[in-house]
Image 1 (tube, rainbow, N blue to C red):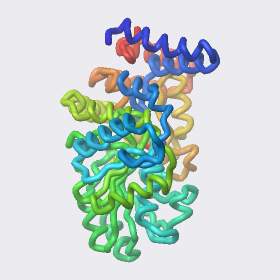
Image 2 (cartoon, rainbow, N blue to C red; image 1 turned 30 degrees about the vertical axis):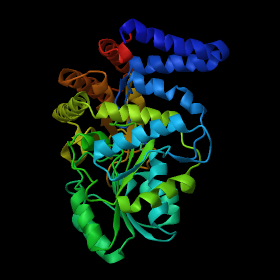
Image 3 (cartoon, protein in one colour; image 1 turned 60 degrees about the horizontal axis):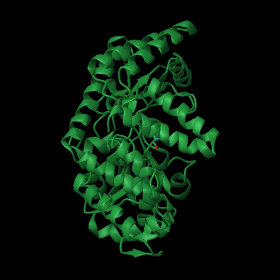
Image 4 (cartoon, rainbow, N blue to C red; image 1 turned 45 degrees about the vertical axis):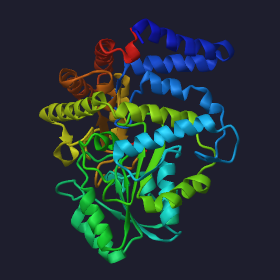
Amino acid sequence: MNQVERKIYFARQEDIVGTTDPEVAAALRAERRRENEGLELIASENFVSLAVLAALGSVLTNKYAEGYPGKRYYGGGEFVDVAEELARNRAKQLFGAEHVNVQPHSGAQANMSVYLATCQPGDVVLGMDLSHGGHLTHGHPLNYSGKTFQIVPYLVRKDTETIDYDALRDLARAHKPKLIVCGASAYPRIIDFQTIADIAHESGSMVMADIAHIAGMVAVGMHPSPVPCCEFVTTTTHKTLRGPRGGMVMCKAQFAEAIDKAVFPGVQGGPLMHVIAAKAVAFAEALTPAYKDYIGRVLANARTLCAELQARGWNMVSGGTDNHLMLLNLGADGISGKKAEERLGRAGITVNKNTVPFDTRKPYIGSGVRIGTPAVTSRGMGPDEMKRIAALIDRVLRSEDEAVWTQVKAEVEELTRAFPLYGEA
Ligand code: DSN
């Protein structure tokens, strides 16, 4: 598709919506403009291909397909079956998984399915604390996981701010959990899945590795894979994997039936077949050499951006990054994560506030910001742009002057114009 055709594609989408609903069409147009003009540094966001986008907007959204390929509770499933089989087989190939369920609507529902397949209410589960990099569904007291199971949180070490595997082993020995949950949403370092699996198996526990953030690196072999050593691996499909918003569960063959039953009818009803088709498209893209090259650039960009910010005096949790994200620790006495997020937003730079390990501020305020490179790399940005972005972030965070933020916004727009999203001018 050339640039003119892409423009027509989006204009048509918005015009079609606009013929019956100008208000929603205006929101679509404004969001496309925001995405195009801004610098997207939220570590969990990305820009999907036009093929993924088109599959999402397809007639498959019309179809009810409760059940699984070849065994649906509704007639007329022959073509959605094709899409789901393609998604399952491609995911298996991508990750070397024995069994895959591509139906979870989200990562939270993928995780819920694993809990449902493995645990009873009240069972002991070990999960990494949210403020140490974990996720709500890894046992936060306000989440179903924390309300249903007896959660024992594990932390990072104070000195290195990396997972305390020794403490984790002690907790596993003491509590003999049913399940150890690992994986993270704000952890910049390599996770040693093999060590965690060894710890779990020593204590008679099973492991669920949630690779939502690092799935892209795992798929191309740039992060150790939990698939061979963990019973269950869950992921979202829209972060580094660059697919549609959704979830997925992988497991050993012996748990296939339990997982399929847990996803449907345990947690969900009808699957989103248009999303499943888009997952299949994204997995095919992820199997190409171009995707491996993309992930290599995501990692190189993260290293450059992190080093440039550190060179300007900014403190990074754990002292750096091994993956696609970094956690800038603004310090207990510095501006809060919330303020930093707002200020950067005024300059057209989108990040999210985040707590840092042993944070004294509440999660809604936080002492850090999480910064990631998957989306800007999808636009084609490289090391030179990372250096420029580090300088822009530094200027915004060090200035109280709104005029500086406005000036940076103009520079952000100049930068993003050179990397048009979806080839738009
Ligand atoms: N909200 C996701 C993230 O930003 O990492 C995790 O679910």
